Length: 114
Length: 111
Image (cartoon, rainbow over all chains, first blue to last red; front, side, top):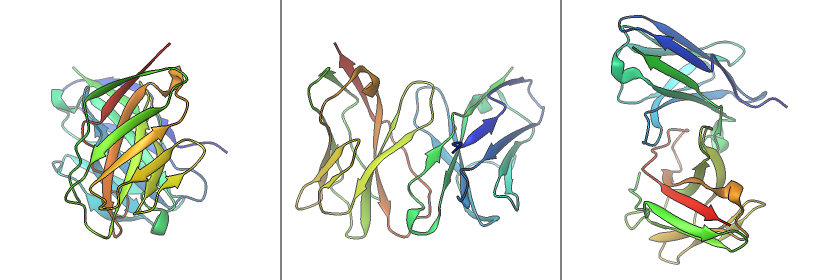
């Protein structure tokens, strides 16, 4: 079975632009979470979706938004990019319910903002 | 969720056991201890979790002290591929997948 797949793997944007990152969860997983990892730090929680509803939001500005589709895939959108948004963006999926905290992570999308 | 404290770095010799400590002195009765690791340039990987009993799986063993204020992750026969950052995370049973990662322990396995 395929793991969690993310696209694109690398991208370069300039300040003020918009970016959309995509994630396909493991088959059968209904929960998707997004994390931001700045170089040298641990991942920081951004959003969690379960059954297409937002179940959690981290301490990130409104420029960050996400959604989950009927097939459980997800998009993370970031508007008005800042230099500080440069990071590895990780998507993780889980079964949800009692298995909600056993996450399978994708390899990430590395965003560079110039 | 309770805060965890881990040493920033550790070394281990290939083939030997790696014992990674974690302090979680403020843990409550309905909080679990989870361990993840992150190998360079990859996403984090789930290793093991437990509540109060010791746990073992194909990757590692988790030893939780009787008072639950600390735990140790044991990699029984470390290999070079186990070089990674190891994160100890305490999670409430009602949590639905929001993980709070600290700085973790960078384990360097040497030949």
